[in-house]
Length: 248
Image (tube, rainbow, N blue to C red):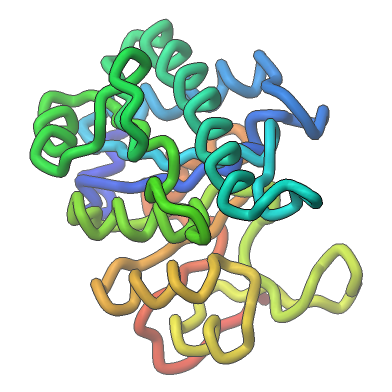
């Protein structure tokens, strides 16, 4: 693969990867073939010279906010542990793909993973390891989207990527509305004002305050990660734009 850093000027990224992505079409659990493909793409990008941080969700295992009778705080901690499971699977697959990788966690579980600390994270990134940030922010009531924005700001990422099963940001739910229009680019302000389903408001505001552009793209399509980093028009770009631009 050509060097995506040279093509786009991006040298350090933070990828927010949903837990549902790792489940593939199964909905729950981890699909081994999806895990291997995603790990291979992350390894390829890192080996090309782009520094890669990843925040992984846990919705394929447990979603604290939908835990019903379970106390919200307890449920959120269970969700954080679910992200650790995904992170451990991902780090193993990345290493098997021939790239160094390290899990860092916001929870104190040192027998399983290294605790998050900014300087240590930057040291891992600088040596070429993919760093997987698990357990969200370590606090209940904060989403993994917010954790991704926070870690992106802390490591001074050039770009926050949100890898989902949807090919960008729409003006309304494309599953329910056949006439939904996809944006090629859109401002942070419009995302917040129109309550578009990009990331939660806290995450979007964090990116806006720290001038971190967001790209929302379909990670389920093989090769899309490299395409985004090579400068191709993939997905939707969220940033400080004066006006939204829709797909033609």
